[in-house]
Image (cartoon, rainbow over the protein chains, first blue to last red):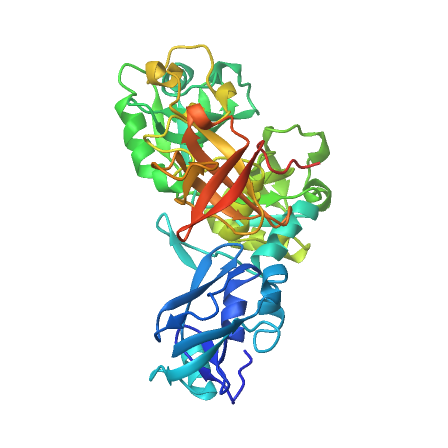
Length: 121
Length: 337
């Protein structure tokens, strides 16, 4: 599985970049299989770390996406409405989900190395 | 792997869509050994089966099989099953894994007064379902029997890669194919031979999307101990004969099973269904099975709705608190070549 060292990861497989972008990990997209639908939060919504903020649906199941930080949603990736498969093809770039103005990241986020151990463990 | 009816079952191997597409365009195989097999023998085998099922077992001939129901005594189905006629006075019944114990107890209870013997052979048989338009062509070089000559629902003994097996031209995917009954001790070796000739292994995930596209009900979803089985359009499974639970079966079903198509958002089992544009009042039904359709490229679902609303063209399905438009379309969603 691919991880990026500049990102922080949640045990529930979301990643958070230093600029507040959120997505799901390569491991998560692989486990989900073909993503067919993504439900994104409203821009402007205030969220607390751990809140359910989005849903990623593969053919077989719907998976909740939890906020890896507290803060305000500032942008969502509208391209996923027409091309949800970007989550599979490019989980760390074109397949990002939303951006946040982060007030406080979850204390439980892991670095790439620790996340890789946990996910594959 | 996920627990399923007491078995550990793979949801997917290479990936659900790859497996699904292999079955629609070439051939895939499912290990469905979890299904139960009961052998029914004795001079009264036919009379016994006629009394506990709705379809006409008397129409079967040796080497033929059909779909059938075990009606309950209070309105629903004990199970939906397949019956294979081996010979006069000998039948094999294949039942759903999760219902093996319930079916067994039910059937035992109704043998009274019949000279009939039931044996539970579920542990003795493995069952591999090889499904897809190229199945017969791919298997033919490795069998002693002319597979193309066998009709749908044929049931016969054959050699396959040298193994003695029973083959049935049946399946649960909406494609042509064969189900292979093989001694449990030989199943792994046979699986490896099938793998070696390019048959794609497929898991429970693809089995569910394939059967949903084909509009096949699944026990525990579209059928249950309480759902009236004629909510579905399978009226042909009930023949004009005396059988257990007859009065309930012939009463009008309060609900109807319909097919729904959605634009984008997948709907899942249990989601509430509303009449189009009606904002007040309780739902008129619920989704029984739903998924994105790999073949059609949009979400599909089956839903049980109040019979009074079943003819409407448009419905709404509630997804995470929001209503989404759904269009009623005829079942099956997909019909094989």
